[in-house]
Amino acid sequence: MTKNIIQLLLLFAGMHFSQAIADNKVIVANFSQNDLQNWKPHSFQGNTNYSLIKKDQLVVLKAVSQNAASGLVKKQQIDLKKTPFLNWQWKVESALYRLSETFKDDDDFAARIYVVVDGGVFFWNTLALNYVWSSGQEKNSRWDNPFSLNSKMISVESGDQFKNQWRAEKRNVFEDLRQSFKRDFRFIDAIAIMTDTDNSGQSATAYYGDIYFSDK
Image (cartoon, rainbow, N blue to C red; front, side, top):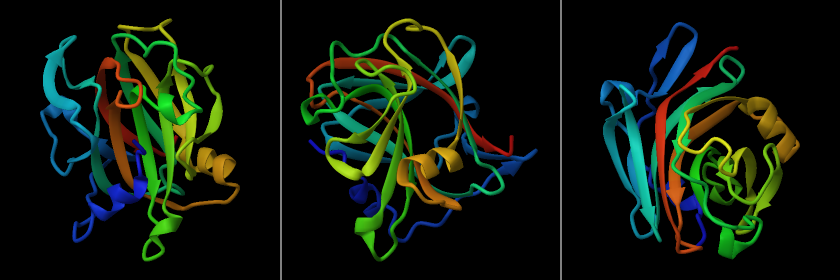
């Protein structure tokens, strides 16, 4: 089933932007403080189970998907001129098995974080950039989402080399958007987390740490 980013934006109607700024950081997810405020569930096919748990001496978000695809979405506008760098930590118990994620039937990921540029009244112009833990694409690969040219994919981690290990990531979203869509964007309007296995019918467990934007 298509992970239609337009559906996510419709979820935001009437919501207010959330901002939490500290020490040149814009905090998006404060899971370590048992905080899921303003994260809204959205289901595409079945429900991935998301819960805050204590693991490795930290409170983190655990995601368990069994032939399901649902995510958590937060509407939060980020000024990429001020804080272009997206920072997060994640861990997967294992990558999904033998998928070629450039095809619709294999568009599943043990872990993904993505950012959304809202098309406003022209909702068909809504864009999404997905940072994924891939099973079939090499690290740093880029490709078009098989369901929509408005959604681009970047493999940040790949395979099982680091399974069951925390990985700290940093991406320059401003530059990634420019490279993916061939134009500049000052703002992103939402952030989403998803562990999804509905197309392949597999199972996956992933863990997400705190998420924030920074100026360097």
